[in-house]
Amino acid sequence: MGSNCVASTSIGCLFCCKGCNAEKVRNAFTFIPPQPSYEIVPALDDEGNEKLKMAYLLEGLASSQLYRLASEAAEVRELVTRTGSRIALVWLRQDKVLPRREQAQAADSEAAAEGASRPSGEKQEPIVLLHCHGNATDIGMMMGPYYELAKVLGIEVVGIEYSGYGSASGKPSSHNTYADTEAAYDYLIQQGVSPKRIVAYGQSVGSGPVSSLASKKTLGGIVLHSPLLSGIKVVDPKPDSCCRPSCIWSCFDFYPNDRRIKTLTCPVFIMHGQRDDIIPFYHGYRLHKSCPKQVRWPGYFPARASHNDLVETDMRAYFGELSSFLYDVKRIAQGQRVEPPSPEKPQQVQMIVKTVVREPQEASKDAALEVNGQPEYPQSGKGDDFIGHVAEPKAGPEDGRYEQLRKGNIAVPGGLAFGTNGASPGAESTAGAVEKAAAD
Image 1 (cartoon, one colour):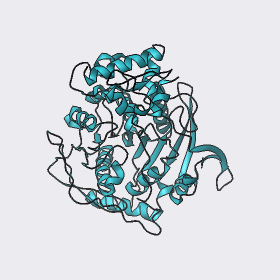
Image 2 (cartoon, helix red, strand yellow):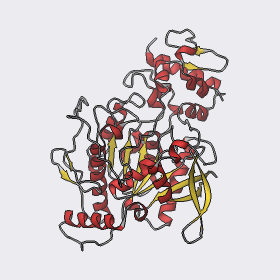
Image 3 (cartoon, rainbow, N blue to C red):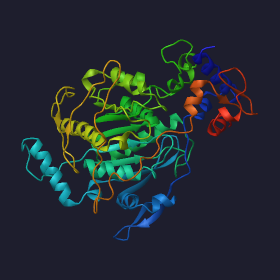
Image 4 (cartoon, rainbow, N blue to C red):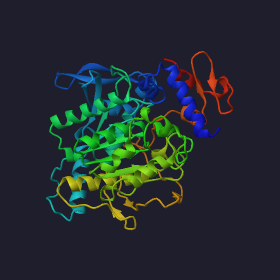
């Protein structure tokens, strides 16, 4: 029996042990809420007014200077979604992250880049990055990266929690993530943020709600970081062969990014590490190629990066590519006509920490992209808030659950398991997390 048939049969067994409930099957291997890293508590601002604040529950976060700065800079809100969940939203505004001097320098740099088309020092509304995190973290663990994004790129970052994660009520599900993301978007619009200044950023599983949002709402652009083609396609052992799970069990599918991306009208930037063994590289590559050419920006596909280290593998390249895309989105929001840059022509971009030259690369036909030289990290020293010194949070599970599914190893209640050899492989061949996912 081929690997596709084995994987499809195993999912059928999971369907039966889940009481033939498709939603439970979808959620079994998708949502992995970690122990909450934070709580939302009442506090007072400098003027004695009541506000909400994020308090870390993990000692590693509470003792980190970077995370403390992020918490102090964050504006915290609680939203109620259309499904009834109460979720947390954090907003790192530019005036809380960047000193006035740095804001003025950023404005002057942009004016120079635009040929002094506007007065030097004139305040421009920043891009607002609406971030949807991966399935193995929460917004508390993401506060460090949020702060880095805001400070390095000179933007504002909004992090949204998923139902059932962190301090949020409700249960994790694909349907709830759609409602969570839409609630955050609606809140930004109510606060006066122009849709053209909102860039939705979906990391790993977060690519699902972001693609959905982009298909329904007006956005300045989207960033898909290690995205998936669709929820069920993640477990296809051989994606181009017959009997693959995504074909046999298409009724279980969710997050159909591969279908939605073909209809998008806003700029799209996709990045994916070629050594990703959680969501294989071909997912991001095929999404990139499926995107309409008029909105497809050159992708970023580092050869040495995997699922959970795409940023830290080469931080200068990551921030440079992202900065270039956001710069284009901002120009479009200002009414300028901007076409996707040619892969052959480097583009000058502006960053708060340093200016880099972008040399975008299209993926070759065989997806064999190489990166020359050693990774170059932003230099960190006194006064720079330890930018680049915080470990990248784990966006996806590292317990091998997806690899186990692709091999057809799936535990079911009672200890029975089906493996690739047709026998019960036992505890040694199925990760503990896989057993938990099969149980109610």
